[in-house]
Image 1 (cartoon, rainbow, N blue to C red):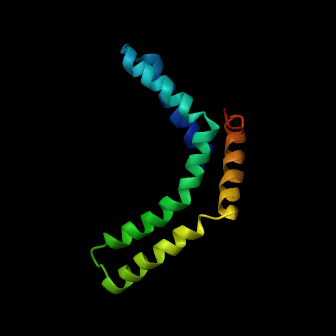
Image 2 (cartoon, helix red, strand yellow; image 1 turned 90 degrees about the vertical axis):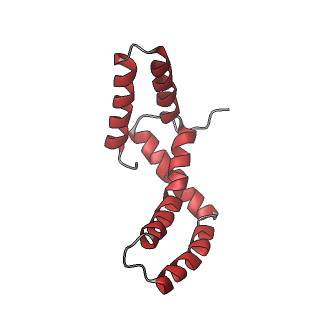
Length: 115
């Protein structure tokens, strides 16, 4: 969800549910969800997991293909671990943090961690 327009639409939907429901439990869940979505720590988590999910999704799509090439699939799965390992670097973390800060600025969330 690097698109702030989409993220804001999600927030508006959560607000709409909270404002229009008569069920207190649903209203409470919506309020909690909105709080979480506006938390910088959560945004950092989204941007940290994004490249991981992209790699895993690519492998998943390949493995689910009706024309599965076993040799290619095996090679792809074997390459997945080093690719994921490459994401465990300071450079990858800084990239995720930079993206998270920029995104937080776009949606008016203070880019600091709560204690």
